[in-house]
Image 1 (cartoon, rainbow, N blue to C red):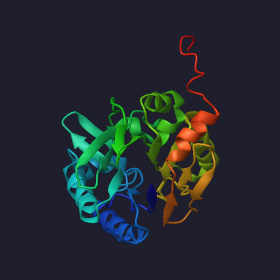
Image 2: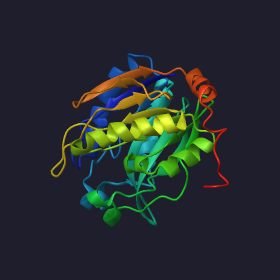
Image 3: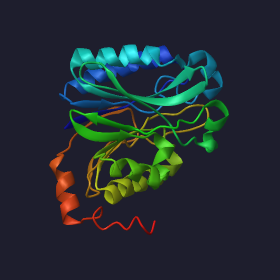
Length: 258
């Protein structure tokens, strides 16, 4: 599976500018012939939370039309990052996934809201899983702060997920946490981790970049720097079964004790 991650420098509160920039970077990403393209968290608005009542996507209609078009025209799968989506019950931070036909095959709203960046004041927490499949491979999606909850990730792996996709807006001061937590999630779940962070800054934060792809063995396959860029990586899905056979973690679990 060939993957391209779009590490976008998000313009604060400017959805149209961000869509145009993402489309330009998508054209660059397509040169590598990817099976999957991944965007970061809240890539249309950034953390302009106070204005989401005006800029959030009503029921996700705009992102479904745009990202679905990108996927269908280029015959790619898209982990279309997450966007602020406005519903009758509130505004959610929602990841959407599109298959090669442009159909939306998953919408996952962030379950764990990050209070340090005031998400809980402006967003509603999701309450459903992040499971989907890509070209027949079981996968799961999570959003940024979710990676600090290993039990949430493990639940999805026990249900079959083999590739874990994580769009994020992870701040630069906690870059070490980003790399360590993602490596742990790969090793303990014996799964590929594909994490797409943003670059740049907003009025309150500087973000880390360093989008990364990690093998089930915990090895870094590809990693970006801090600046805006397209990161590409090839992953060998056969490695998952190989690692799980060598160290049979899932066979040796004692769920009756925990």
